[in-house]
Amino acid sequence: MNNEAPRDGGQRKRDTLALLTRPAVDVWVATAGPGDTDTPQPHLVPVSLAWVDERAVIAVEETSRTAGNITSSGTARLGVGPTRDVVLLDVRLERSLLVTDPAARELAERYAAQADWDPRTAGAGYRYLVLRPERIQAWREANEIPGRTLMRAGAWLV
Amino acid sequence: MNNEAPRDGGQRKRDTLALLTRPAVDVWVATAGPGDTDTPQPHLVPVSLAWVDERAVIAVEETSRTAGNITSSGTARLGVGPTRDVVLLDVRLERSLLVTDPAARELAERYAAQADWDPRTAGAGYRYLVLRPERIQAWREANEIPGRTLMRAGAWLV
Image (cartoon, rainbow over all chains, first blue to last red; front, top):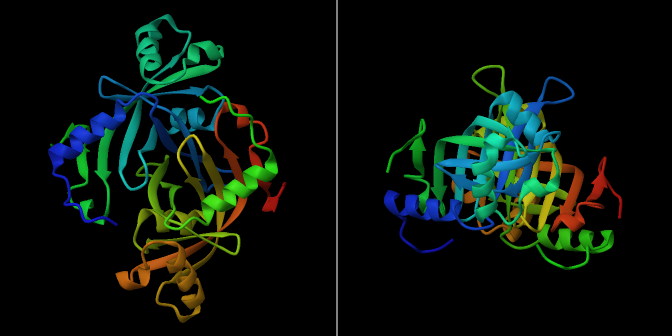
């Protein structure tokens, strides 16, 4: 709990972009896939994030559950920041590129410039997933729950 | 990246329990539910955690997507800690109790003793979800990926 006044939308957007473009920032990636039964099964992993042209870019092993779930469902929910200064992004898969794909070259440079590792050094098994945000929410404490939605249907509200 | 030697299993278990029992610790709760179409939809929120008798206990609004997804699927995946010192728990729903249920009284006391809020003060719409860990993993950097599984099928391996 704190006693700070809630931030306005403009401040939250500036803080959100500062967080998403921070060097070596990580993101929790929540995905869903079919379970052993018919019950959908949640998955959650932390990975490095790059923010490139208003897209969230992650690099994941092609055979990972995260890659499989995003590829088949087209969707993920990302959480960034400590839990009392959160940014949540509901995203859709826009592009998927092998890290060795010549078409991924500029993306790879920009990913490596922000993240603290370069998946091109990890072998051929990695893919960049380019994720387009549809909704972005940001809040710190309970007094910031009102006004937490900064983007809806892919458009900034602030 | 760091240059520290990987922790052994015993140390990871001690660190994990220290984290899970820390006052006012939060947890990322990933769940899955049916989407608008047949595609499973991921959800992710940060909430306060209490660790009671080797169970993860969260308090959520009865009408929330998190409560609905866990109730219908029986499962969730929890992420605790900064992303470079993570503990991941695959859990199953063991019990669900309204915060006003007299049978929840001891649980409520223990939840309030660890969390920094008491859902009993928030009205009748909250439930405690008691989540039994089936698998627990803990790692810091890439050198701790081997040996990251501390619990499997509900039993500590270390």
